[in-house]
Image (cartoon, rainbow, N blue to C red):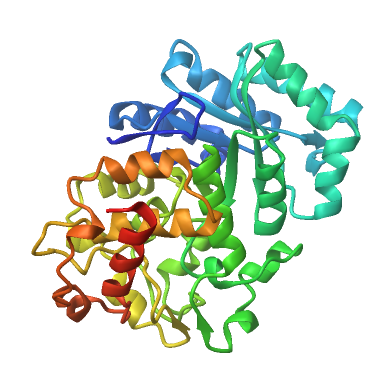
Length: 382
């Protein structure tokens, strides 16, 4: 298992994590099985948005005796009332729900306390102004949560939260179909097939800006909906009109700036192991570029997806990495220190490019790589 830094939190997280969708399977007996398999596989991060008390208690039982082996991302504002899940912004309900969750989970702290499901700008203002964000800060100050997170599907709202400096971790929906759609306060627009009826081209700029801002500010991204609820794995259901593999979906998400962990939904140990198998997959099995190029309704023409099909470079330049750092620098209009340092750490730099153009003959998307290398050499100075 490969471990990544979760932004500036200091946490080292497995790049494959667990979503909680399967915890309630088989009368919640699946929970312990999934945690057992995760521990053996080196999976150390999980998300728990569910407020169902049976699920939380099953997770608490599964963690007993090994709490320190797992990094828990659990949600604030997700409560259980009248036998069903509810998202609330009522501070008294938020506080009572969090206290109850600690008891159910049999723990005295949560690693990432995630403010649950904020997809509207008015809702973010409510979180800032009605005491919820202050409560999260109080929890952090007391050590009951270690870091403050937020979950969202809307890049404009998420960007507002990130730029506020209030959150350290963002749980966000990342996959190659959702990334093309403009921001919306209606999450169902992400999988509405009519939104993909017209020909879509390249990543939505708000989403690109969000990922790059998270990278610059050190906000770690934990990925939900990597498989689009399973739709992307099925050609008949996929908005792209072509099926992707689990490995391709995971690799795409992990290639985005600031992403640290993909929270893979699993309803069985076998499904979890299919995601964990990404760690041993070949480059060919992970490669998504040629499949992207075959999408009938979606085009990434002229856009670098960091797939590394341009390699190998005769001068041994890591073209995908140079391009990613170029995008990060250009998005800010200034040179962030972290980007400059990461670029400097590369073994070879854009200034070494001899403009032979071999890389462009291998690019499935017609990216003007030589122009990118010229711009990078100018931006970074070498």
